[in-house]
Length: 60
Image: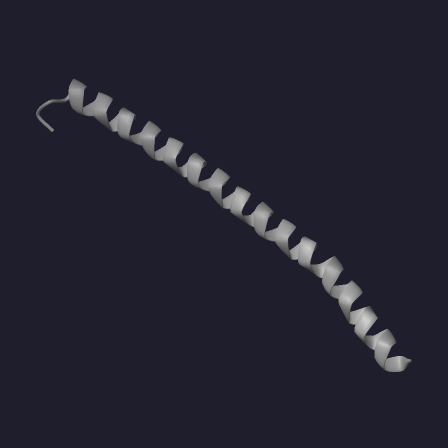
């Protein structure tokens, strides 16, 4: 009986953990994607500012 209980307990724990791990991975991937987007927009903004500065000061 204890053996069966142990196996069932392990199975239920794994059933609980797997979706949680998957959800955590999804959230982490989503956060990374958001941060990459934010970084891209910052870089893009800085490049456009630099471009404007260079257009106003062609001798630089």
